Image 1 (cartoon, rainbow, N blue to C red):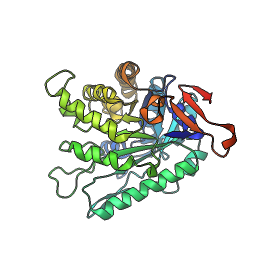
Image 2: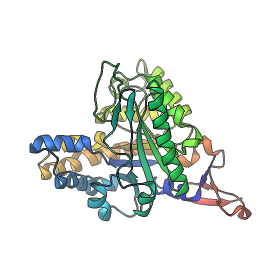
Image 3: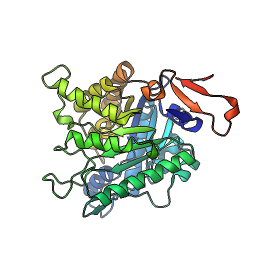
Image 4: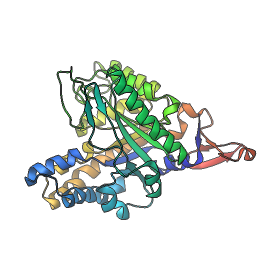
Length: 353
């Protein structure tokens, strides 16, 4: 498996110097807007409140991050100029408002945004969340696959990495019902794994998977405890299904829960994390006390990230050494110039063959 020069550059921009991902998600919309709206007692969350909170996240957490994931409406306009130029910039493309069709959820792009616009805005990568259940209605599954393939083809056309996120969600038949951006407590591991396997097909053009735990975070045991081997086997299966570099999302897990999840993910071969609420949710509870939020980010969130980063440095697999690239590392396609030969990348070096 090879990678184009533009995609290689974007992957490198998102990772740290060793090829591991320490990425902070600041693109959440309903999980931030809804609590703000409730606390303010207003029909809509004030733009200044949402953007102001995201600005604090960028200011206080970027020092511990290799890249940050921003949304186009709040985090990007408010925070792009304060984002350290050494960090990778990922922009989300999916609309936070999804359609609940009779047979499942349908995703859509944000109005007036596209892969091309993200590229022109200076993005190093495009992130898209696709809600997917392999047991949803066939027409819904087909529409979600078509949606994802269109994004993947556009990312290939503009030579920018495609960061693809999958979340299992409740169907009408399920006892557990929620429209929140949180993991299902009753999710089945095989639904998670089969969803990943479906989108590992090269026609979707995924460069980096952003994946949820196959087991609810609250049910993940301490490493080495009874049941740990069975959970590790599921993470190992998730790695095989992905077949390319992948990172863990937190889906609202608590700090200690997410730390345990990362241990299993890294043992299976994950290359880092792209997480938000596990890092900053406790600080968000202080809203609208801006000084309190800042103090909590500095006193708890940033130190927690340093813990995660130590674990990441010790256990995560550098993305460019993933077996999908072969023994030599991530091979780069010299697009449009077959006469120059081939080249491959190891870490931050490019080698000619």
